[in-house]
Figure 1 (spheres, rainbow, N blue to C red):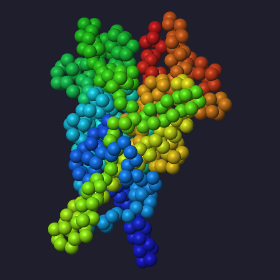
Figure 2 (figure 1 turned 135 degrees about the vertical axis):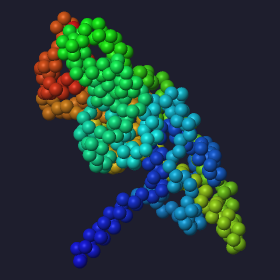
Figure 3 (figure 1 turned 45 degrees about the vertical axis):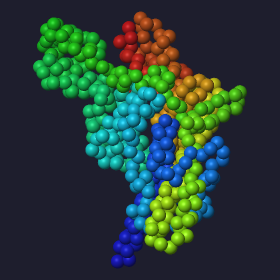
Figure 4 (figure 1 turned 180 degrees about the horizontal axis):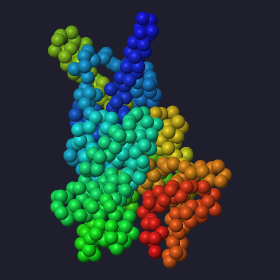
Length: 481
């Protein structure tokens, strides 16, 4: 009986911990994941909705919040007229989600909506659970520039558990991926070229011609990629004209659905509004937030005076008026505090990335990037991994060497002969260099690339070399002749 009571008590404590996030903490988390452009729109919208907020002049704001406790409130802060009497009195923004208007969504990254946001928009329209949405966001973030998913689903499940605290089965990850594969453009979320092309065919009307195209891809994909038309004729029993007719339709499909959207870094940098600006002067690196267009806010002095007047009165109308004013003022103060916490977290996170990738920010050489994962940054700044994930999602930094997404600075590591971890990006560069300089009449096989890397101190399996080559969109040796 005693054990049962203890078990109930422990379960009760765990329930309290799970549900212990304050409305202010929820607001901070939501603001943290907004980009600079989205944040500007959010702030201006809040000023319109809450008359207790006003844009501050170019002086030190009235309500500054230098220190925070775990609940997100300033240390020692007291509300001027008490807390809310019931949940009905809590400001709407504390209870509702962040609703984005169509204009806000279309305004992402200046005048261009990014490929990533385009997919997220479709994800949020699906009838998914909160956990499935989290899985979907991570899957979308794991797609390469072509919209292809190269990571195994087991790796996705492991990373969700490690970095986001989401314990999900591989079968559930696959279920969400199948939903993403129904998004536009067709072929998004495929795990291979074969699956990408099949997804596109599945969208078409099931005519005899489409059925033949799917048959060829399913049964003769290797021959198709190697242009072995004679092998296809033998395997399927088709004539040369029949094979040629099917091939003529297959080559019209898009092998790179993501690239067709035009969201590669090189194509999109002209439209991106960076969230951070990093300037380098000799050995000095100066970081700043690109927030000059986000209004600085104050609590309206007029509202404070009105509250004190109404609170001093004892009649019912004055008490109701004081309650309304109190709600608006508390809402305004929390919003100001949430903005300041957002800026503090963003700056802390970006500074940690700079510190850990300092050689790159000084030289601009990709080979100088060290292996880095979200957990490394989280441990360095003493924040949760999920907080770092929000702080880096869809954010960009302007440097002396160009504009980069923050995810550019994160990658797994590969050990060399000295036991040092180097970024996978450096191995990518070596493979590209070897292929660029190879004898075009006798291109390097994956095994030869593996041996060449071994001579440079990297012991990497041939299968892994093949994966890196595919990530670089380099065909097999036979296809490079």
